[in-house]
Length: 97
Image (cartoon, rainbow, N blue to C red; front, side, top):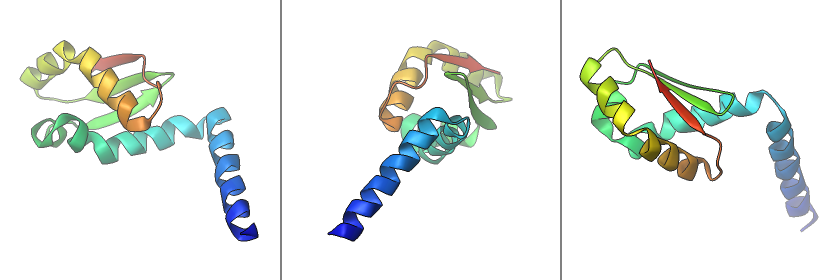
């Protein structure tokens, strides 16, 4: 029981650290990358070159022009789905490049 309490407090401490750390956006970007196919589907995931988070903005990079247009129209849905996947409202804006 003591060991369980210690694990919980280490987990909570790590979460608290990440909340205040610049590492948090990197960790969240990794979580999004891992879940991107589930969030947006295999086709979009296959043609997405890079994903990153900078100051509550999700940057999605793709060299496929029709996909860029599709993603621009789906910005609100992307924000909603990504925030749902992360379990908190992290993303406030989406930029397609």
